[in-house]
Amino acid sequence: MECSVFVPSHITGFFQIIENFDPLKKGSKGAGVVMDKGVITHVKTSKIENKLDITINGKKDNYNDLITRKTVELLKDTYFFDIGLKIEHEIQVPIGCGFGTSASCSLGAALGVSQLLKLPLSFNQIAAVAHHAEVSLGTGLGDLIAETSGGIVMRLKEGPPGFGKINHVISKPLYVISKTLGEMDTSSIIQDPQHQKKINITGSGMLNKLLMDPRPERFMQLSYEFAKETSLISEEVKELVDFLNFETLGASMAMLGNTAFALSEIPETGLEDAMISRIDFCGCKFIEI
Image 1 (cartoon, rainbow, N blue to C red):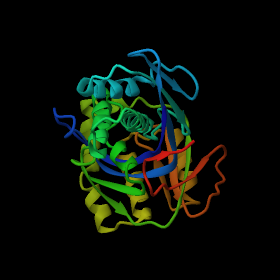
Image 2 (image 1 turned 90 degrees about the horizontal axis):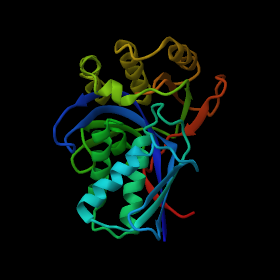
Image 3 (image 1 turned 180 degrees about the horizontal axis):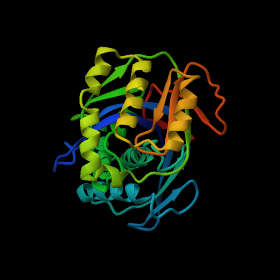
């Protein structure tokens, strides 16, 4: 038996961290854009009981498979299945660079395993398990709920679907142009008190500003303001952002990654080695391979 799931990637433009001991109430508010490149997850059963075999882009990856293992552990804690599983992630975007791949892997695994094993879970319950895994490991705070819906997403209340609350910036189909210069350790920033304080002070009020003027251009303006005022943007990424600002609707830094991104009306850029994708308006879905 096999089940395949596509979960889009997500870039956050600005955010605020919301702490809580309850993982369902912990997360972030903010805004970001969902892309049509993401993670395809294949879940299969195996003949060896309790064996969990995970590959990422065809290879073993003991660091980046942690989120998938945590997700399966949380499902097992409640439903006590002992069937062996093989989970394969095909990741179409750079890992650890601000594209929300940990949330994509976690949600893809949770949906695939739940569907394959016929677990008695609703969509919101499955998404809550994936969100729990994310915040427990510190790999992300708000990508998951955006990836369930698609579009330019405003996260008005922290948490997974069913607890969190979202709205959308209305947008015609646009392209997302991005270029990454390397990884950034998300947990080292979102779990650091000094970074948290600066992020939350800077991000305060930005959602209201976007709600008052919900246009893609305003989203990008606020994102760039956030990147500069938090001092999270490096000089190298700023150079890319400044270049993209001249030819697009606006550019900024992906939170959190050494990545520049921009929204554009055309799938063209003078930036070498850039990745071009479209805004995804559908969110996660089961697929046939």
